Image (cartoon, rainbow, N blue to C red):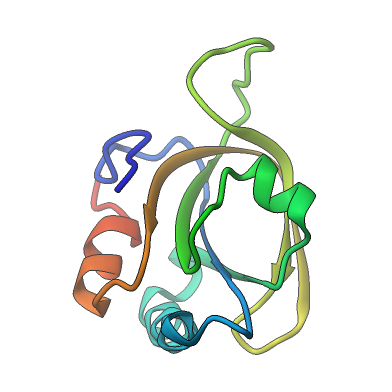
Length: 132
């Protein structure tokens, strides 16, 4: 388990949860269903992005070694060049839970990461909208 920051930390902007998965990974198949169910619960409070069968360059950029991998990003307007706080991406690209292509302009800062199959209540607690 890797954690970049406290998942309950107050958000500075919009929140996006990215699920990195692959068709060939049997244990990852239930994760997409969990993301769909939670996306309905979260509504507009969280952008849900499914990143399926990503190329190796993107997996390297996101430091993904295991699928499924759950990533929580926060939209930030205060990016400082060279800041050592972690991964920043200019935009998030993938699919919505209904399968439509989506691009979420950024910048986005990675705030939390977990790899492997997770129960729905863990994903909801760690990746969902904060109350703060």
